[in-house]
Length: 440
Image (cartoon, rainbow, N blue to C red):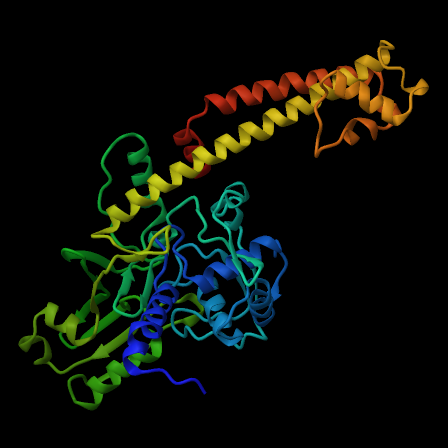
């Protein structure tokens, strides 16, 4: 066993652990993911998982595919959290839930060996393969693993929110409505200032109010039916049926309420309670006090600490700062995508032009291939400045004989006209327009 002095430990080992622990627990503002989540996305993307796979199997595959070091059981829980789609979880779940992943009333999912997941219908729209090829790669012990970050079409850190506590830092970002986020992105693209976006949970029927700075208040729905009867039809997000029922049981046991009846329907994620009180209950309390007594008001203060594109801690003041930083980086990657697409399209055009010229040379007997050795044909191609592809002329030499015809020449000619038109359109399209097209 290696011994280390306490002073040396706090100078070397502990700071390294603290940095690594923070990196694991706090999500990136770029893709809204923590390392374990990013490994899962990468595994699903690279293996194109469109058919249902057991959560336990996906965890094993991810562990092997990305050199995950912290146990498959932990990954199973991460996959479940990324897949759930009821109120209080994901506004956009990039993995699709097949079978019992829990619900708002009872959020506990079934065992990982009994539940299945796959790519959601939104997966490929959010994580465009064209961008993935441009991202900074990472290796671990000589093996390729997931990139440093992804660059989704929307800032997923704001779409789904994120929460985590690392060494010395914490993160608490509430989710926002994707439609509101798109509106603010469009404002930024059009040169207007972005506005604060109110937190939003899918299918939450209560209200959200801004208190001060980064503090928000979520309020359930309470209706007074008569002097002694109240009905609750919505509660704040992230409170399960069991937890809320325990609040009411305590009020009943303490004599503050007479009784309550639970009409909630877990199948439809609807909360519904009827509460009986004494006559003097409302005389002593205002509606605001009653709301608090029934745990229908929940305050949350956001903390916008994130990991940035350089794997360093970055403290944002609000959601607008995150959105602006994300937009700048996202537009940079549209610039990279445009350059690469232009390069690929030009290369394709050059290849087609060389095929056309090769066919034309043969038809016009400039190149009499039947009388020449392969080496002599290659010499001809080099002397006439033909394009090499993958350092060879095989794309020409291996053409089927029926492609060396006037018909094929005319076909390539038409394709060239179309491809050159597409190249001109690509060159003229701005990065802003590319993003707008994706958002549509």
